[in-house]
Length: 306
Image (tube, rainbow, N blue to C red; front, side):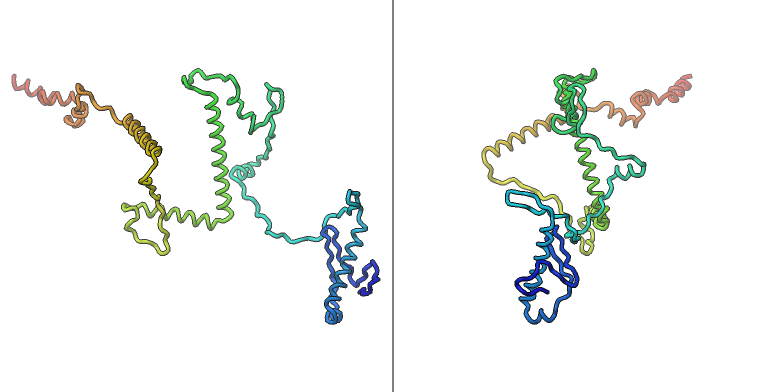
């Protein structure tokens, strides 16, 4: 170990120092000299630091350099020291329903291009997004209308609604895939949620809606819908809006109610009364029975006259 002030630029030790210029680190694998450590700790630490820095500078001056406004800069090589991860390795992402089906059927995944060729414009346009090909019908100035279309048929609105429906369907599938992945990653929590849902359903399946049922130990209370009441004091504009909303609701309810019979119309349902009086046989059978008891009665009457 070198202790004098005119120490050599080369560091010689029993085990060479492990220098990693990529991380600018030096590791000394040599055992600690117990004698010098106990004699003068500060001097011992300074000597170790001097040897490490000298070995690092020697390795840096041996690297290729490049010019810069601040002077020559050394080009550091890739690090060789394997550092531990701060977080665990990510778990493999569970397959979606389509990915599992494609893997079972041997279907190869094909990535669709973001651009699509437009024959009318003779250029590449976006498949989705702004000025996308999927909005062609919505943005074109003339559209063919089917023969059986209604008078208020709007092709732009129909195309937009179909596109919005596809987007909503994709979002629903994405949510299902996420929930399925969560259940696959933690089946215990998924099973627990299913049991809680089943228990909540059975609790309100009785006639009393579970009010007089015995409670289980540790059973949570079902949280119902919290009622919200309007404040007693409102501004004039809020009261006017509430009144208009109430009148419009009454008007819509009046349109849904059944039409009342006119004064000249009969309130009695004749067909229902006849069906009830004839016990379901009809008005003709009831007339025959009232006239003479049907065919049998008429035959006995003719026989009696003879």
